[in-house]
Image 1: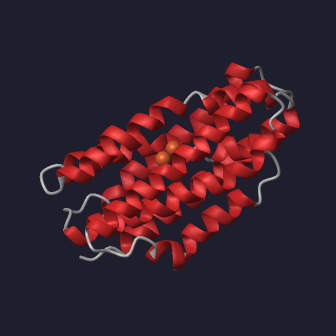
Image 2: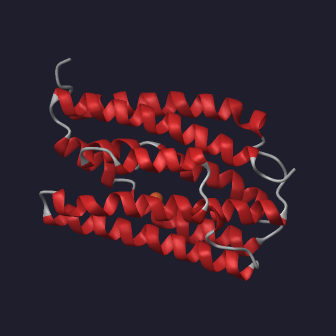
Length: 218
Ligand SMILES: [Fe+2]
Ligand SMILES: [Fe+2]
């Protein structure tokens, strides 16, 4: 395969991501992702969020020193700080609701561990960005929107945390992944590895979401 130009390359990645999203959305009801929220389910969802936010920060942080440009190093550091901030906001909310903030962190579901072990083992920041930030992190605003609508009438404070902080910050760093991929994933080999990483990342993410939903109380 010859190297694609940056726009075509990003399109190849996003086409795959969107096809996966379609498939996941079609299956959402079958594994209970839309079941009515109870206080226990809200708590579990927040605990899942702690793992996702903290792990996104942990797998990204080691790559700061590999980015060739200071400006991008600064932006990636801010991204890491933001995700850690989100994890700590979620932990605080869980404690207010009398839950254990770290129950899933200390005992992650097998599928959740596989997802993050995969990301921790990737060989380049381009592959990581293709899979995490340009891959399943793009789904976060979409699934959060449905969660916010459903949680608002029961727990407006949790709804506000998602809407006014987590999602607001997300919008501020969406540009980073395409920028990094356009600048550095320029040869055919890197592009192919990025696509493989995104495909595997989506697959593992989908399995983690299914497994998480199946463990929710009825
Ligand atoms: Fe976040
Ligand atoms: Fe994020």
